[in-house]
Each structure stands twice: as C-alpha cells, then as structure tokens.
Image 1: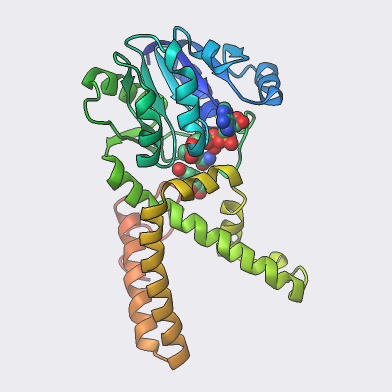
Image 2: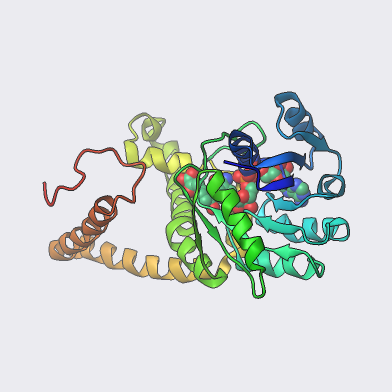
Length: 306
Ligand SMILES: NC(=O)C1=CN([C@@H]2O[C@H](COP(=O)(O)OP(=O)(O)OC[C@H]3O[C@@H](n4cnc5c(N)ncnc54)[C@H](O)[C@@H]3O)[C@@H](O)[C@H]2O)C=CC1
Ligand SMILES: O=C(O)C(=O)Cc1ccc(O)cc1
C-alpha cells in the first residue's frame, strides 16, 4: 500500500487514534503522523511507546500543516476541539472524526470548518472496552466496516482519499447519511450497550444478597455484558446524550417487546415465547449464513437446523 497523505494529525490519543497510528504505519499510508492528547500523562505515554512521529503540546501545533486532521475525542468534546484548531487548518486539508454518533458531531463541528477545508465525518465500527494511548493495535480495523458520512457539498476527491486511507488500514468502507447512521447504530450498538450497563447494574445490586455468586457462576452471556459495561464512561455518556432521539426511539420499542415477553411469562403463554425465540434464532442464522459474523466460531455455519 502506498502513501495517501503527507501529514496526518490525530487529536485525542486513545484507543482509536493509537490503532489508526499503528495501522497507518503498518501500511505506510502517511509520511508523518502528529498527535495531541489533552493530558500531560497521555502525551508522556505516547512519547515513551513511540505513538506518533511527533507528539505536540497543543492541538493547534499538531494540526499546523496537516493534510488530514482526525478528531478522536469523545463526541461531546468534538465541537470545542474543532473551534480550537479552526484558524490553523491548512487550505485544502480534510477534517474527519471517528465519533460513534454522526448528526450531533456534524452539528457541533461543521460551523467551525473554514471555507476551503473539507469535512468528511467517519465512524469505524470496531473497538474494545479498553481506552487510552496504550490500548491500540494495528489490526483493530481489519475486516471491520468504516462508515463515511459525507455532509452536503463534501468534495468527492476528499471522500475518495479518506476511503483509501480506511481501506489501507484494513476496513471495508460504506457511505451513509447521518440520520440513518444514528438510527442503525442505536439498534446495533448504543441500545445494546445500555442494556449491558443495566444488566450488570442489576447483577451488582443482587450481589449484595448472593455474595459473589453472580460473578463466580456467570455464563458467557453475562460475561459479555460485563466486558461491554467496562467501556469508557465519558465516551458512552456522550454517545447517549448526543444520540438521544434515536436511542429513545429504540428503547421505547425495546421496552414494549420486553413487557410483552414479561406478560407471556406471567400468563404462561409458551406459544408467544416459542414463536418469538424462533424468529430471533432465524435472524442469527441469517447473519451466519451471509458470512457477516467475523467473530463467530465455525461450528453450525451453514446448517439449516440442529
Ligand atoms: N472505543 C470504541 O470502541 C470506539 C470509539 N469510537 C469513538 O472514537 C472516539 C474516541 O474514542 P476512544 O479512542 O475509544 O477513546 P479513549 O478514551 O481511548 O480516548 C479519547 C482521548 O480523547 C482525549 N480527550 C477527551 N476529552 C478531550 C478534550 N476535550 N480535548 C482533547 N482531548 C480530549 C482523552 O484524554 C483521550 O486521550 C469517541 O468519539 C468514540 O465515540 C468509535 C468506534 C469505537
Ligand atoms: O467492544 C464492542 O463490543 C463494541 O461495540 C465496540 C464499539 C464501540 C463503539 C462504537 O462506536 C463502535 C464499536
């Protein structure tokens, strides 16, 4: 893979920025990558582990002369960072971000983008429950989707170049509009995270009664919940505050269905439960048969029934 940008600036040196740095270096996609982190400790860590070719003490210093600037901070901080760097952005440069919510980020960032600078929001659908400069790794984006969410008037060349960067970092790339993105992510990521947080909270309350049994005997489903519920509190607070409407819409539907299942259990309506679980099982099989579950073990793949 060959170089796509001369200079890239990463603002906020956490999981996503550090993974981007290692993935760009792996494929030689940028000549120089500068980085800025708000805390002195993160900057020191970055310098110690060789994260970024140059770690700067201000965001403006990192951004000066950059062809691509990627905002990798929590979605609630995107607007303030964009405002801070706006006056030093190079004409013809592209500003992008990696935020988990798109409509709110576009609303906060776009007003600060000067004429002659391109804005192409993006969202890699890849992550872990870890955060900070030491949590990143080059393979994070391999075979994962990255959604580009161009705004009205986004320059086709700027979009194509950013697409090439994400493909170079191992991703499959699609384009989507912001409202659709936020609704899809509310279903596939944001509401599930909230449910995991809630379930772990419930179990924590229970633990007072049953001592450590909840943890000791937790089967795979609950363990997955605890992993997800260990995700960064700042990041997820901002996601829910920023994607409020879509998340509330999905949670409304979720609670309706949950109440229906609750009622079926109370009234002994086994048919309702059986039909519901049969429908959801078919959805899982559809994902596996379409080859879209990259994490799934091979057993059962392609089997019509078991
Ligand atoms: N963690 C994940 O699994 C994924 C996260 N994202 C998005 O990527 C963005 C970054 O997330 P992570 O890398 O996981 O977070 P992280 O917590 O690992 O890193 C965030 C970095 O931003 C810095 N920061 C926070 N507020 C700041 C401010 N006001 N000014 C400057 N720097 C500030 C933090 O000090 C930290 O270095 C978020 O917008 C998140 O929604 C997207 C896909 C996956
Ligand atoms: O760790 C997990 O299970 C995730 O779901 C990672 C993740 C978190 C936030 C995103 O916006 C995209 C991916």
